[in-house]
Amino acid sequence: MPPISEQASRICSHCGLCCNGSLYSAVPLTPADRSKLIAVAEVLVEANGDLAWLQPCAAHDGSGCTVYDRRPLACREYQCGVLDSVAAGSLSAGDAVMLVSQVKSLAQSVAARLSAIDTQQQPKPLYQLLNDFDQHVQLLDPAAQRAMDPALLLTVGTLKMMLGKHFKVLEFADEQPPQSP
Image: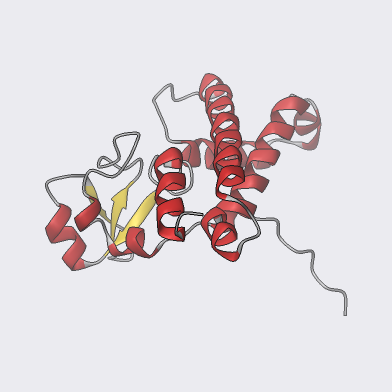
């Protein structure tokens, strides 16, 4: 069995969801990160003054990071739930690659469907499409919510559950119901 770092590299190069705007809208940057990356990608200053790098990542070429040796600290420290499961031995590297393929396929399907109904008609990363869709659904009256395409709702819900469970996207993780006193 290859070492975990070798397995992680193979899984990550097959995936890229943390880089392509599927999981996050931005990556927090340190001042040192900004000075190393300013020429590579759009950097923004968030309302609270923190630096962030917009996603999808301009340094990800679809098969890997083109600035791997100088990638942001948040990227160096990030390890998704899939990699955690492989490291813990509860998921084989082969099963991890299959899971990533399933999630990527589902993500592409959801992105296409949500893009088709997006009223702004401009390309958006999946993370933004999911958030916009959630906001749209919340603003609908109950009758309009019930009239929505159940297959779309199920597919979106399944993707969000998988992203929360396997990729540590807390916004999409199942919330626990409040405990009764």
